[in-house]
Length: 211
Image (tube, rainbow, N blue to C red; front, side, top):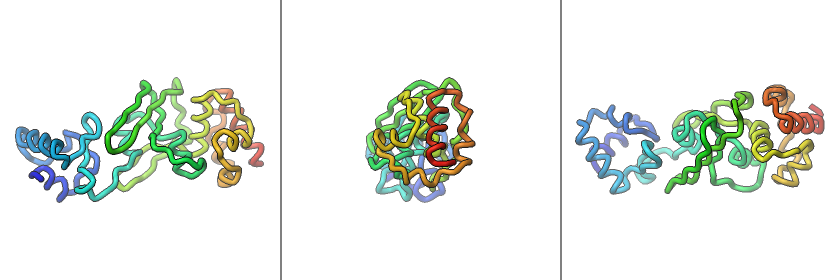
């Protein structure tokens, strides 16, 4: 272990950090560069992707939040699709690809220790409805509500779904998973997408739920 790693461990340093954050340590730049190179080589520090770093697991006090990491990789994005549906237990499968919607180019990033991050562009202009800020122990990130994640899924795969049966047949989402949805969840989303498949989906699901 070197002076840079000791500093990061013993001070209130971000779990995920960039090179510019390291400049705040006060180390002379030539020493900082040497220490960083050594720390990555000896696996004291993980270079996750480009200019994103974290201490290796044995030296880190907090877990890395995939949502925060995904938005460090692509800032103008939000976590959605099957990752959200799995996280709230609407679908039974565990999902290891962190899937996000972006207004940039499609991108797939494979990291050595933190899984895969997929960024997909499906809207000309991303509607902000149904996206909220999720708080984690290491920072905040943007995330879709489960209903918004379903709308994104319908858009991405051009599904013509208009009833709950499709959700059960294709995604194995059980009707009881939708019992916590409320009128406000649909009010927030209906009419904002201007995409026929999504609007038809929301109308059909809402009607079946009696909302």
